[in-house]
Length: 427
Ligand SMILES: *Cc1c(COP(=O)(O)O)cnc(C)c1O
Image (cartoon, rainbow, N blue to C red; front, side, top):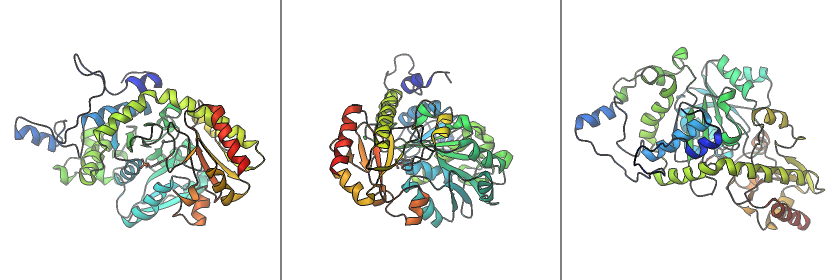
């Protein structure tokens, strides 16, 4: 792999056209692929040869873009999924079975919390949710003999807590399980969790990576460092023969760098079909090409808004890990010294009612479920994305009833501040 800076990888990583091939990533708009003999195709089905046979499992456009994301994160392999939800589901279900247990930070995206706490519990997988700020002793006490992974978000959506990677990685590795990090908010431009011990990195590419609110998608990256065979008893799916693939043992056949993604593709993508459309992968790639340029502006606007809000008389509290006064500033400075993200959370002194009045008065920031794209937007999590959570769960997720999440787009800083100042005045 080329040893480029992240800016060059954003633009040129992944797809490397050969003589006479298209300069831009081609959209392979085909469900299926043609072979000369049944024997040729048989080798693909047996995973004896690599190639494409059906877009429910794999498509060349997706693989070019996944290769770029792997390179950006410093991983060994990657795959695209239909959404961030699918990415996080696969990242866990690829290694955990009925009867297994996962430790997750409590400060995570509402959709991920529901996936874990409701839907995956129905599959017989148990979760312990723990504060990202817990002591090492507390974290240690959360492990059970059936624990199979530790999960957290690098910067949590929407609470904006920052994960202490080394604390979580150390505990996971001491127990012989991988550390999985959802790195959606900072993106690999600002933070590369693999450098700090993450084994698997996931993304909702729907956010900054696409960056234009155009395509829902997800990605999973394998660091290629976790030694499944060294903990073979914990991960039989990777370390014992897969009868649905003629007795292949993924960790033996594909090694450290390939086992996780090959299994997720050939089993989970085959059976669940949560593939990203090649059209969306193409759009995602356009977003990736400018990601390093856009992240700088998102962060500058986020910093300006956070600074403005923190001295406003109607504001009770501001969360932005780039602010020196923020409790997560030290850990953010360590793991993402070039910037965090463009999302700022804050609480108005008037609570829920004031939040709703404030949001109605905004002209540039639009009320949307979405976050992290070119157009500034805002959300009241307690009445939308986190609506299903109980008061206690809201508290654990760092979401108070009056919390407003502001996502700074790429507009002029002065216009964004003026919009917020005007709405605060009227609220
Ligand atoms: C949005 C989001 C998800 C879910 O991604 P979708 O693409 O909406 O399925 C997961 N994790 C984080 C941190 C998110 O912000």
